[in-house]
Length: 391
Ligand SMILES: Cc1cc2nc3c(=O)[nH]c(=O)nc-3n(C[C@H](O)[C@H](O)[C@H](O)COP(=O)(O)OP(=O)(O)OC[C@H]3O[C@@H](n4cnc5c(N)ncnc54)[C@H](O)[C@@H]3O)c2cc1C
Image (cartoon, rainbow, N blue to C red; front, side, top):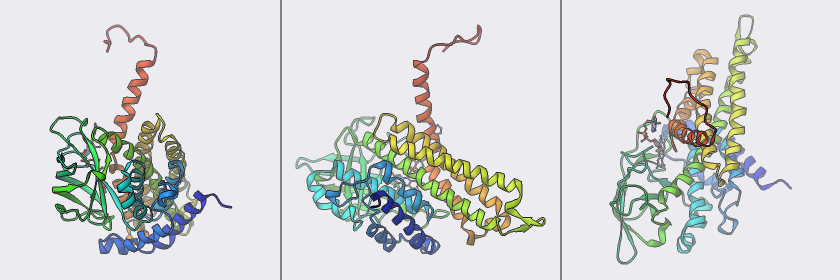
């Protein structure tokens, strides 16, 4: 009998081939989340990957489930990203939600009848997540009343519930942050106009306004004091998921270039038989292999002390490699690489977007830089030459 992960990976591959690729251009033109497609993803078991079976999930370990986005990324990286965020939120609800909230939401989320997203970013605080203003007041009856504004909310207006990070006092810092689930139909919750993006237009992105939004304490996902720490754990999973999706994107770009180059006649031979073209595509192939190993090692490290650093390595290296792969493959097609019909413009836009979302490549470099400084502290001192100064 095939292992569960093999069945799920096959389902994801088929979903990319039969559901995403034939229609993604139409979804972008329609500028609307393809709910019928995500319903099919749900029916294929792709919406409760890490949630326990008792709540209707697949119960896969992160190290296995994250490979799904490599398959979906061959279809479209933004679609893979949105489903990855839904899966991470569903995992959080099942792992940390109150019993009452789980009873109300968990099975609908794992079954994909309801979609979830995560809301941390604000207009003034992206990388600098601590500079947050959205504020919850905890009322005498235990309910929370939230005011504020979130930015870059994916699945804006489409998701049924938003796991939102808020402050609970006027104290600076993150010691008072919490994460609370806000259902879409809660009075006072609204969305701004959709952002106008160069591609991935089917993914609704907008600001989210919280105007005296009151929710029950049952909706607390992470209590006061754990909001930012929990959000960063979620972001580590998201970073590795993005690296996984980028590998699918690189494979799609490489396969497009190979399919074209083997037929393009030039100089009495074909484009693919030119050494220079083989070197260009060979570099893409090597970086794809390296990226695959890196994200899978990072996925295996999640939940261990090495998890955050490995996730940073994956998020730093792989999206950059994907940008390079998409532009190299475009170049290999010459002028044809710019034609919409080959889809390399879409892959290039997606790769750039994936460098930014869930912590930019620069923020990953900051995480890596801190780890290097820590390592340096534990290493023996090497004397610096006289006159060079000392730290
Ligand atoms: C398509 C898309 C979907 C998104 N979906 C969501 C979502 O669903 N929920 C959510 O909460 N957020 C979401 N985001 C927000 C995303 O996580 C932020 O855009 C990201 O964290 C960067 O923040 P920023 O855009 O404010 O950039 P800024 O923080 O303003 O960064 C500007 C530049 O400064 C660089 N920088 C930052 N810190 C340093 C440093 N220490 N040293 C050097 N350079 C630095 C950055 O790398 C970047 O190049 C989404 C973003 C995109 C593009």
